[in-house]
Length: 398
Image 1 (cartoon, rainbow, N blue to C red):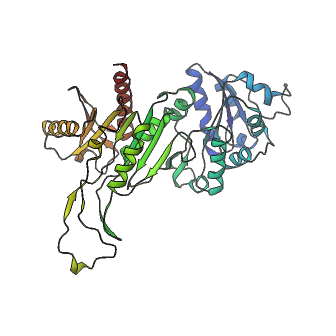
Image 2 (cartoon, helix red, strand yellow):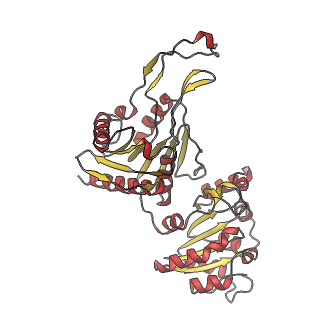
Image 3 (tube, helix red, strand yellow):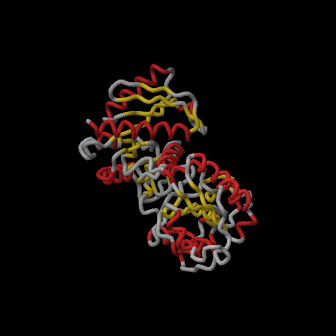
């Protein structure tokens, strides 16, 4: 694959020679272009050394006076990485006054961009409006910025996506046209306008599943309940959609309504099993509450049986307080059978609660069992998604 990497003046520009090297080792041909200000962040000689090609710096001084047009014939894809808020604004608003914006104006191949900037800049309404326009109107694919510590000492969404994510998105449509639905987080059940019951689900597993699938260019419907850190996803990406829910009833209705658009459902959310038998429109005085009667919520997965597509794969999750592996197996298999899931990812709560790691075991409907050592939640998500995709393919071959 022949790739044009265009670099703007984000501090993350210093990372790009490594990205270029990794892509070349995979057999891709790389040509780089830089803005004038980007040269303050990354060495041109480093880019030329890693790419093995001349770096386009100023189209008005190039040997080919039509390089901004002819580069179309020399490359298969344009990746602007990192792209700063200034370049996003230029491209979205038709301002073509430098090398990269002019190349972007004339580029007719596949176009991708990987933003990297301060979290406040990324969440700026004008930036988000411009990002949306680039995707919906100009046909760009976004490689979303990630959450993490920044060079500016802020912590939030805005960091350049990992090399793995960029490379997967750029070179690999790993998950094809599979349509994924992911649920994440806890639900709430309201007692009155200010009181509710819930659970301690953080939503981290759902977020990790989303990131893994998104890195492989999958199509995702992300249904988010109450979570520790709300996921900033491709609200601007026409392929992906985020739906926020509050109660178990809302989660149920949303899951059931999206089933006809779902090939693989990851039910990673933790909906409450019970809800108050009665809710109050006004705050209830404490002296008037002696006890709260609870009634059982409907089982969402059990309801999917007659509504899902014939070959839809259902992945359930079981976080248990089992005394040992045998007890965990018993709980997981019973839950999988009751909920008519194709596979269930089980773990002991003590192995995951409040941690960024987990120890999972996957049980399959046909009796197979796959154990894993302690992994990061990112690694767990990679294993879960890849196994689910393989199971889905096997199911569709039958």
